[in-house]
Image (cartoon, rainbow over all chains, first blue to last red; front, top):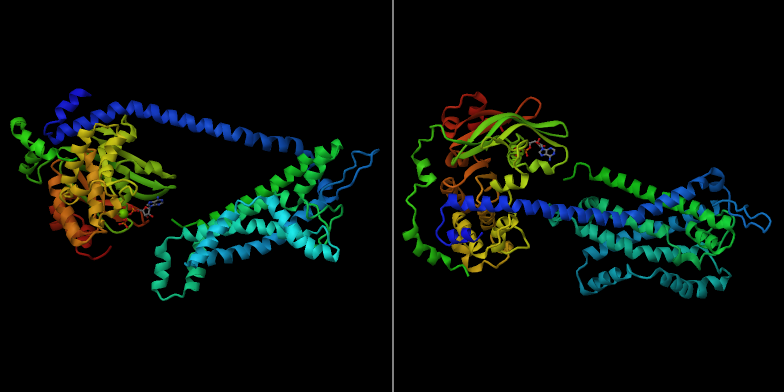
Length: 314
Length: 291
Ligand SMILES: Nc1ncnc2c1ncn2[C@@H]1O[C@H](COP(=O)(O)OP(=O)(O)OP(=O)(O)O)[C@@H](O)[C@H]1O
Ligand SMILES: [Mg+2]
């Protein structure tokens, strides 16, 4: 290398310079190949470290849970087994309806609210709104047990309990909605912010009103990313236990009332694990499998929709 | 920091080698004389997901000359250019068939590693794309650093040399540490040319390098090409027929066939293409009858 430098301290002919660069890059090539191999190995190791446990979770859940996936298990409600019939644990239909009811209603409230909120935060410029945006982002990290506690203290105790409703699906809905709103709002706002400004400028330059630009240009463009964010938040909510565990009580019958007690899949897992009946505990695998499948189907659906709407877009 | 220009100038005289530069040799060759081939294309075709984008392309790129590719939008000029330094390798579903040889060696099936190939065949893109997170200096030095050259003296010298070749040195020499984004569009494009030149490529591929520039910057870059070709063979895609006529020595004309796939219609010296083309379709295109 030192000889090259001596040469190059002098005026260099283009051809010499080229020869030098090409020689250097050829010599360096071996090291580059080595470095990229090393980097590749690092990537593979990190893949293994991350995915071995992740795969083994799913593998165990499927392995232990698949034989619970029978129509009987899905369609009969939970039973409290007595001491002589420990295996008579019934099924999960009560938890399925509870989950669909609570998560469904929470979603119906949270999704439109979050989209509107994200538009407001996106369009606004003032300091107050800037502070609100920051606040929303901070709320994403809100501990879910705190939400539960808040709903209990500020909603259940003063209002619901006063009329005799101590444990209700409604309280769970409120709690989950509060949990989802910051998650969804931040995701939707990021999606709007992701739209290249030239598109809204193009629309504005055609004389479009701001609201039109939002509906016709920004929303359609941002839709796939919004949907992804919404689905992620929903997946999170479906699996949450803490924000609802102490609000919704338990229900051993299937019912669709917001005013009655409910059981959801995660809370049933909690109660089953809490019991000392081995059959109840073992059924947790089955319930977990149902939960995982539900989340998987949700994500798959949103991916299909996203892929559809991205088709033909650069 | 970059004060070596005076040093090198001093040293030029005692060390000036008595060799004739290749460039001055080329100037003496009449443009219709056969020149050495650096890159040859034989029956090249590119398909995307088994849809043919361009096919039946065979021509030779001559050393130290400017070869232009013209043709209507969608005729596969960019596609062909990207095949020349294997950028399609990054595109899923893209297949390049036929043979492309650099100095007689097949660039797809031969022994040249892709990274080394790309340092020998540089590319300037349609829109200026300097690395936004790097300074002017670092942008130009980036290619050399990618190739493992760290010696500061060499980098300094190469950066100055490349920027001078790209006619940008005078206007940026005082602000080498400034972010590349602070340059005007035309300056950014010349920075990209300097960045490509710093690696001392044998061939420089340029995809409509002036289409986003004003007439003055365009003029700058066109002037550049006539001097640059002394050190590097240039292949340029352009929509501007005057530009092709002004800057190129050889010219390839592409056109979509019946099934919308691009084909090479004619390849000849620029003079012939623009004065006496053998194919009627070339004449029609030159005269602006379609495309
Ligand atoms: N990545 C890709 N995937 C699929 N099709 C592509 C891709 N890139 C180019 N094509 C197709 O190949 C054809 C040729 O495109 P190309 O960009 O090479 O044209 P061009 O001659 O450079 O046009 P222009 O003058 O407008 O730049 C077009 O029909 C285009 O749709
Ligand atoms: Mg193109």
